[in-house]
Image 1: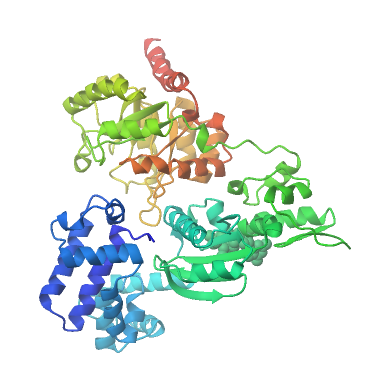
Image 2: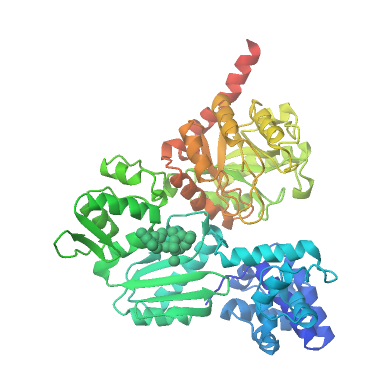
Length: 586
Ligand code: DGT
Ligand code: CA
Ligand code: CA
C-alpha cells in the first residue's frame, strides 16, 4: 500500500538513522553511506515515491546502492523501515522522546541526555528556561529559543498542517479503507479539510457502513498509522507517520446526512444554524433534527438535512458563519465557480527555465485536461537561479511554441513570468514585453522591503501597459515563508483602476491571493485568474486548490477570467494595452 513520504521525510530518516547508529557504535562505513545519501536525496529533482511508483530502478541514481535502494522501497511500500525501527528501539527512551521534538533531532537529543541528563520534554523546557541549553557549545541562544517556541506551539495545537499535505493523505486513507472494506457506502473528509481551509488542525473522516467495526479495524492496521489514540465501536482516532491526527466516525447510512453536516462545521456555521433552527422550534445534533415535543428525524443526505430547515444546500467552502445561513434561507446563494468551469491555465513553466518537463509534454497534458488554451510563462532573464530566458532564448522558445501549438492542438499564449525588480521596473525591455500574449509579473527578490516601498513597487509594475497579471502577490509559502509586507487594499484598488488581473496561485504551498484577499478583489471587481504555476505535468492537477480559494471567496465563474473562452480572455487582457496606447496618444 502506498504511503506519502516526501524526499525531505526520507532524507530526514536516513539522517536520523546515521546519528542513531553512530551513537550505537555501528560500522562507520555504513554510517557514512547513510550520511551521503541524505545529500543525494535532497538534490533529487523528482519525488522518490513517484520513481518507485513508476517502477524505476533507484540504483541508477549515483550514491544509491542495493542496500539503500531496498530500504527506500521498503519504507515507501510498507510505511516503515526495519533498520530505522531497530535503531530507534536500541536508543535510550529519553533520546527517542527528545528527537521527536521539532528542531531537536537525534544528535542534539543524545547530547541533551548525556551532557544535561534530560530525558523528558518537561525537563527540556526547564533547561531552556534556565539557559542551560544556550550554554552548550554549538547550540546557542537562537536554537534554544527556536526549540522552545516549537515546543509551545506543539502543545497549544497551534501546529497546523498545510492543506496540500493533508488532503492527499486523507484521500489515500479513504481509498485504502474502501479497498479493504468494499461495503463502505459514503465516505469523505469533513471538518476544515472539506471546507478547504489552507491549514488543517486534524483530519476528520465520516462514513456510512453496515459493519463499522470492520472499517475501524482496517484503519488502525493501515501502514500509515504510527499510534492508535482511541478505538471505540463507531469512532477511532489515529496518529500517522506524517504527523497527522485522523478521526474516523461511522454511522448507519440513514443518519449520514446529519453526521457529515455536523462534523463539516465550522463551529461558527453550526452555531448560526442552531440559532436559526431554534427559531423554528427545531433542535439539531450530529444524529438528526428534533422538533419540539417530537421524535428525532434522520437524514441520509446533507441536502435533505438543509432542506428540512428550509435552506438551499450550502457549499462547505462558505460555511464560516458569515451570512451563508441567511442567504440560503432567502435562496440567494451565489453559484460558486467549479473546477469544470476552468478553460485554461495562465501560468505554466517548462524546462526552458526551472520547470522539469518539456514544452510539448506540458501542452499535451493541458490539452488532456480538456483545456482550450494554456499560457507558457517561463522566467525572465534576471532570474538567474531559475534559469531565466535571455531575449534570444525567449524568441527561440516562442518559435518552438508556435510550432507545437498546431501539432498538439491547443491554443498557446506565449508569455513570461517577468520579475518585478526592487525598484518596480520590469526584467525585459518594453518592446519585448509588448510582443507577448500574456505577461505575468511577480516579486521574487528584495522581499524584505518595507510596506511603502513594496506597495509602490507592485503598483508601479501594474501601471505598465504590458503587465496583465500579478502573480502570487504576497510571495508567502504556507508554514515556511511569511508574506511580504504590502498594503493589499491599495494594490487591489490599483488593480481595479489599471485593469490588471490578480492571480490566485493554486499551488497548495502558496494559495496566494488567499481567500480573504480574493474576496476583497471580487468586491472591487478586480479580474481574477486561477493558475497553477506548474513546474511539471502533475502539478497541473493542483487547479482544484485554487478553485477552492475562489469558492471560499464567494466567486462565481464570471469573476474568474480563465473560465471564459480565449477571445474574451485576450480582449480583457489587451484592453489594458489599448487603454494605455490611447492615453499615450492623447
Ligand atoms: P481544524 O481541525 O482545527 O482544522 O478545524 P475543524 O473545523 O476541522 O474542527 P474540529 O476538527 O475540531 O471539528 C470538526 C467539526 O466538528 C467542526 O468544524 C464542527 C464540529 N464540532 C466539533 N466540536 C464542536 C463543538 O463543540 N460544537 C459544535 N457546534 N461543533 C463542533
Ligand atoms: Ca479537523
Ligand atoms: Ca477532529
